[in-house]
Length: 310
Image (cartoon, rainbow, N blue to C red):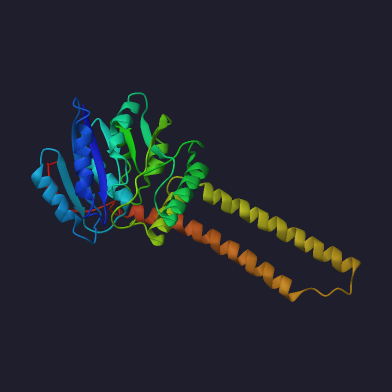
């Protein structure tokens, strides 16, 4: 039996070595399992790929690295790592050292009965901005993708090989891992773990990247936003009809009351704004469909180091 560790790397030249060392220590408690550590640099602006190469040269038996040609995002980097993974179990974790690596045996034990296991934190020790992004992401997953209410989603998770094989069938641009995972299985559990403080650097998720992730979540695996747009259209039409009837009745009952210019402009701006919002949403779906039809790459690997997975 073999465990594959998938680590997307961005801005982590100061932490990735300690994460790899901790993983090797954790695997000493699982002597019956072989393992591999796959690190993918998502076109990181620092020297993390040089550090990855050094790690792989020191331990080519267990370590493999890759560098993407440009920044494709965390989910694309994970998909690249999954395609290189050969283990029976695949465990994903961040490169910042905050994931409780000592909980790996618990995660693997839970996979004996389940298909997918997420580590759950009593208190996430991210900054306020990152925690807000996680909350929005979980709300979207619950509302759009049918995530169970009690299930906590984190970036520290493990899955069986058949789950990995299934999600790799998705080869279009804009991969959204949570959508791929939730549509594959319902046998999912949480394992309580402790979230560590970040000791070096800061999160690579800027507001722009979080916004891109949210838009991807909204449009990747659900037509609920389009149905909400239709519902809003019906609601606006109904309110407009009620407004017209009220104006007519009010004018008949009180002929001296002038029709208001400001109220008319307010209605026009409101309805116009709603229409533009709905058109933008529809345009996002059409644009993504167009990009996928044109075979935009999910990621492009510039360099690899370590084991040959071709």
